[in-house]
Image (cartoon, rainbow, N blue to C red; front, side, top):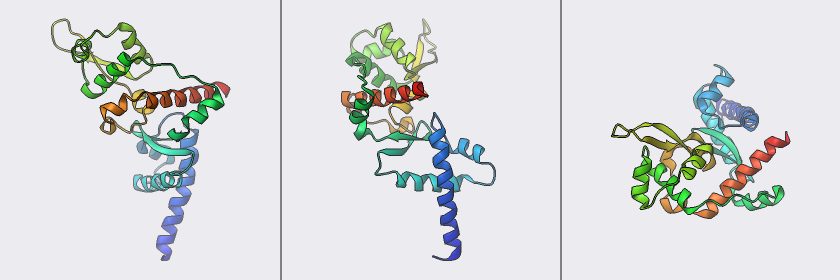
Length: 202
């Protein structure tokens, strides 16, 4: 390795240390644009991306992972350790109904969509409680109104949906069957409850 390459590697390593501290301290995913603004003009986005990739590889086989979520980067506990973490915090994630999961899946894959369209696909009515619960969790939001008689609300996923399901963008949506996996949903709630209790302990 020549001197120029060695200096570049050192710079990337030093930058990854700074990014590690920055991302760890943030309570929400940080986008490269946001990181660049915090770092200042002396660091370009290419250098930030290289440092993030280095950091991601460093954490690839640890209990904590650096992941791309909701258009940004965030440290998250590895999903395979969700049960162990739940034991630590003595949390029992709430049971989600099949109807709620089906409604969420339809909205995620068919958005923007209306309540009547969801009911048509499910073959049964969607209760107001389900819609309210999904909105309160930030998993869905009202995008506007459809230009048809009655002007029903158009529903789509919210940013918290991406965060809680560990998705960088909607393009990363899993197969429908995976989204309906109750074990995966339970892991999400265990992680969510753990993070909430950490915040309350501060």
